[in-house]
Amino acid sequence: YWVTVASSVNHKMSGFSPELIEYLEGKICFEEFERRREERKSCERKGQNVHIEENEEDLDGPSTSGQGMSTEVQGHMEAEEEISDGISKSVHRVFASMMGENDEEEEEEEEDDEISEQPTAGDVFALEMVLNRETKKMMKEKRPRSKLPRALRGLMGEANIRFARGEHEEAILMCMEIIRQAPLAYEPFSTLAMIYEDQGDMEKSLQFELIAAHLNPSDTEEWVRLAEMSLEQDNIKQAVFCYSKG
Image 1 (spheres, rainbow, N blue to C red):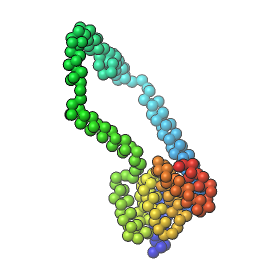
Image 2: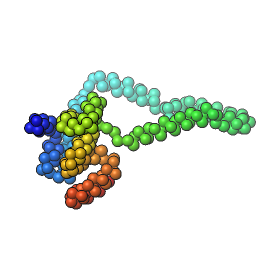
Image 3: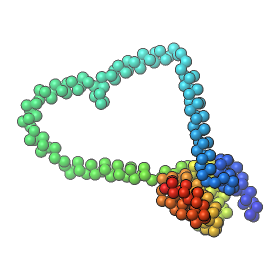
Image 4: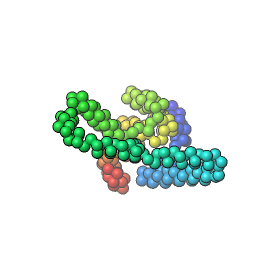
């Protein structure tokens, strides 16, 4: 049975990045894993930029339809040239002339305007609704955004249920499959860390917790906790690295 589980885990790991496999096998430290990961991501971004530049060069060629489009765009730009803050300058001029003509009327009605400008109960309620909406939006933005696809959330939930039931091997296989399909999601790494901690393998638990924290760097308190765990394992270099992240 254990041979079957081990072979299944190795099969799942075949889809992992090279640096992740080497880290999980203990061939490189976490600092080296993060450095290689950042270098690979940088190279991938550069490759995408080169591809985009090549496509732009192909699009720069002469085109007869482009001439007609340029005339149309130029006319559209001329039409919009008079727009200022969403209102044309002609409207601004008319409004300014009306303001000049109605100066005397405004002075006479100034007291009435001050009374009418007092906020009503409806205005206060509307303002409170807007503030509540903005507050909820800000709180939502502060939460760590999961990179776990919606299609895999059910499997992640099932893995957590298996772990809670003590079915560790099945939970590990499920987490490995999620990592293979969504390597940037921190949830399966976090669950694996709890599984190995439950089994008493603190070294492997810390291994997976470091990856989970790397994928969810906004949790500064977690980095401090990992630094303390690294010190307990006499890994001073790793502890200093974790403290620098927190």
